[in-house]
Image (cartoon, rainbow over all chains, first blue to last red):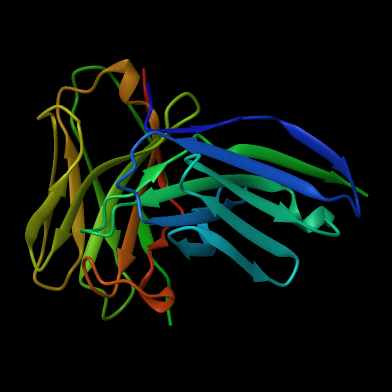
Length: 111
Length: 117
C-alpha cells in the first residue's frame, strides 16, 4: 500500500465551479501537509501548506487536514481555466526534507 | 532571482547506458533533493544533499547515485539504465535542510525528461 493515495482523475469542471481534491495517507507520523500545482512541462509549485489538523484559506484556495481520518482536502472556489493543472498532495514528518507525494489529480476547468 | 535550473531538459538513452543529470539550485540554497516522477508512481524521493553530504535517501537501487559540489550544484547519476527508468527527474532546492516555514519550502526545477529505449 502506498503511503499517500490520491485519485488521479481526470477531473473536468465548468468555470466557476467548486473543486474538491483529496488525499488519504497511512503514516500517522505525518505532520506537514502540502498541495502543489504542476502545469504541463513545468516543475511543481507550492500552493499551500498546513501543519497538523485544521483549515487554512488563501484566496480561492482552502486546505483542510483531518488527522484522525488521515484525510486531506483542497478546495478551489470560483475555478478558472488557469487552474487547469495537475494537483499533487505531499506530506512530511517534519524531520528532514523527505516528502511523500500523491500521484496527482489532473484538473481541467472548461470556459 | 533565477530559479532552479536543470540540464539537459530532454535525454534519450538505450538500456545499459549510464546518464548524468545536473541541477543548479537557487542562489543561496544549500539543500538539493531529487525526485523521479512517473505517471503510475507519481513523485518518488530519490535523495537529498546538504552541504555536500547525503542526508536522506529513498528506496531506489544503488544504480541511482548523486553528489553535491561546494557551490551547492548537484548531479545525479543512473548506471546500467533500464526501460523502467524512463521518467521525469525533478530537482528541488530549499534554503535550509529540515527547516520549516513557508519561505523555506522546496522550489522545483522544470525537470529532465529521460527516455530509455
